[in-house]
Length: 315
Image (cartoon, rainbow, N blue to C red; front, side, top):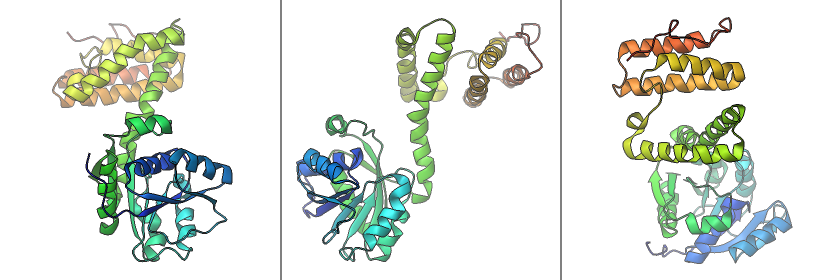
């Protein structure tokens, strides 16, 4: 781990939630920054954050910050613009100040009121879950952190994040939404898919506790294979082997059980077809048969289960 930056500035924390207090504590413990004012909506929240961090002055938004050297706006995404405008009105922000936020979806430009006041601004998004700040203190090292913004801010933040074990990477601010959506797919939507799998298993008579144990090895194995081999090579199942008959029957059964899950099955199956075809694992005829099977299964007028006479499986 590299040594802390030699220019020890005082960090003003706006927002005392899980992310803000975790990063402040990491920088406090490492000696990267001194912790100054810690602002929260309530005095109790500010005091709780200061107690966790081990340093700082608890304040509320009715108080005024002193001279702002470095400010982290750790507030919810929809409050960033208002927080930036509030801080820009304070007399302590000006040339030489640096301000940044940790939103994965917003670029640094959401802090333009602070830039107009003379501050250098940036965004720094750690690809890390801060659900449990105490646990994050132990697991943060190695976290990738996407940075973008003004040069002055980047020159300070990159070594600061490296000092607490992060792995900084630079990103175009205009690409933040797609970058963040990638993280949503990789984390939030994987959770949604696990929920869908458990609901189908429960419908088949397998209670959720047992279902979790059942799919655990499948989920872990799929993730490990996709990350080590690449998604195309790791894909298995009826689509990957071109089993159009089974795909048709399965899609139909899921749609009959629950229309929303049927729609989800169809969307994912079509994505799997494109993935397998792009890897050369399906020939054009297999692709046509699979797409036809999904189309047939989605027809509301077809209430019978597809058979090998309706869609032939290819060897």
